[in-house]
Image (cartoon, rainbow, N blue to C red; front, side):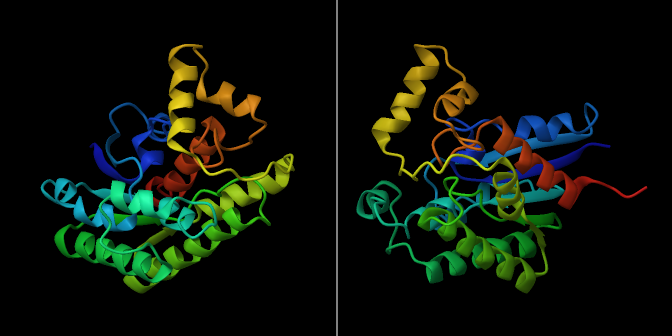
Length: 239
């Protein structure tokens, strides 16, 4: 029997600038055991995901994963172009921790009320690779909010941030300062792939990044950890 899984999120789930975590997730299961459906949009905040839920709810799956909040967390870090993001994503108010919690809580409430799916909320990938820096601390703080929302709504909490932080501590990477991704930088990544035929992993390696291609989007190692956490938390069955 095939288990249908809807993966909800932002650009990390869209996988245009990020290695696709749906691929390693599918490879963890025999062919035909899982059907993965992608619901990810570049730049989405929790508010945007809430507006898009009808696409999932019209034909609810058996399992739903939610990986959202990276852009909400980025908006709390100095240097993020908040005004441009608000205009681009048509946000009715300025991003804040309280609004993130409200929107994600509303997402979970709708999913619980309108589906019978098993629901898992992932904590956020680590922003950057300096765990003591403001960006990583923001992703940690928002991950704690996600854990609280999961507990309050009695859905699964999938500890991605914790797993990635553990991986970074083990790797002991060079302390490269976090840089916010600009539209020009994103286009540059696409150009490197199209013109120079560089893979996302090659781009990541050239930048001495352990889990990401640009401090935000995932390389193969980062994507594999997302798949690992989803599989262990929602799909692995005890004998």
